[in-house]
Length: 298
Length: 270
Image (cartoon, rainbow over all chains, first blue to last red; front, top):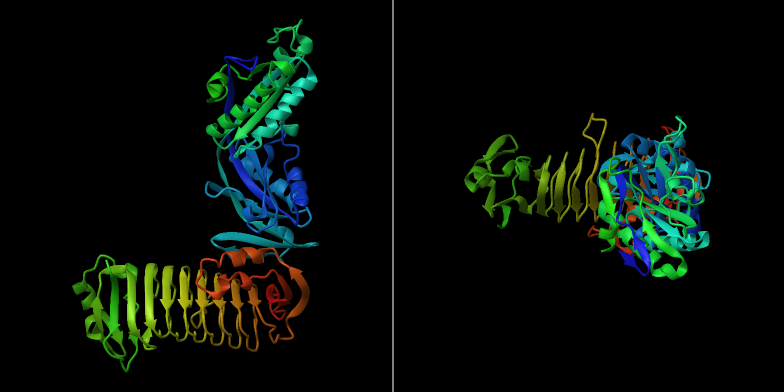
């Protein structure tokens, strides 16, 4: 398959089951809601070392938030429910509770309830106040700028992590420009995050390493500087490869995000140095979710 | 299917215990079976059809017509369905109610919504003393749900209240929120003496400055984030509380009762 001069490889991205939750952070204005959201989703690019994958889903207008203030929806993904709950609570406590004027609400109705502010309330040292409003429990925790309002729990649901595609370009600036265009379009799709910095990862990994202590190492088949010394997957003109990783609440959500992302890359086309779109997989042995690029773009 | 309607034939000298006539107990019963239910009427027990004309079949929608203040325990332990009282209700209206709705077009007596657990109870007239309170000797009053009173309420509203919300469009008598454990009482009108007497936790939300005891301390004026959410939850009510103009988020906060744990609060609109 070739779109606008860009070859779409006959391969698939391989993804695996994860647990996910969403939270809504509001603040006095969008600036402070975003600051809090960025803090909460920081150092959460990959479960390999971060314990979770997190990202900002989208900005919410005041009429979309529970307290009528500007807000940001964030999502956190982890390999298991226990790990997700721990990450959520730790991050909420250190990044949202501490952030001026912030409030924190559940972003998923249903699913299994996991603590959001349920245990953060103890920061109130006995002065915290519970309010059950409309069937939901909230905690009002006195803090130095007033009150930190948080919903007690949010929902945890089954999700999919690790959807991806690779952008192969003739130069590094061209690869990055294509990925930026893709991310801009993919951020319009609900229920997905792209957890790496700016949504783009330049250090795609393979499973295993020559060093026994490492579970993952550089994906040498896609490293352009190794074209002559390893079993490369790159043609001579490829000078830079970048990857976009997608976590989503369902396979369909990731399908949509991949489609608009790849389309945005292809719109730039061969004229802008984009040569191929490929994907990372492990022979189908790692995850049950397979995203076949040509089927997605058909 | 039309609502199951009990129309009082004539006022009785003695009080009537209406607790058998709730939706879940009547479910699946035909008119003959319902007619044969015996109600306590003073010292005697009388069949339902001796006291009421019975029409309609829908046991999940009950109407009590020509009701008066001698009809006690209406909607006791109600667990789903609706009861509409046309007229006044006696004591213990909606006592220990679990779910469903009760609507009274007139006034109610003592202990309405006492130890209520959930559901919606709306009183279009006035309510008597101990609204949402605990039975004498019991430690916890209302534990959940919403009570809306369009008129005034008597003394000790929310006595020992544990959870839920009582919304009063009119005035509240003395000792409103006394011995309150938690929950919310909102009063649009005035409040009497000894507001929040011995309250441990909970919120008294007021539209007018109360006469506070010395054991309530001023904590200053604040904008509280939970208030917009609270007011938004009132939107579905047929009440002045659902009016956009009724909402506010800026209050003067008083903490108390300091003679107790002091974790309760009186919030007054500013």
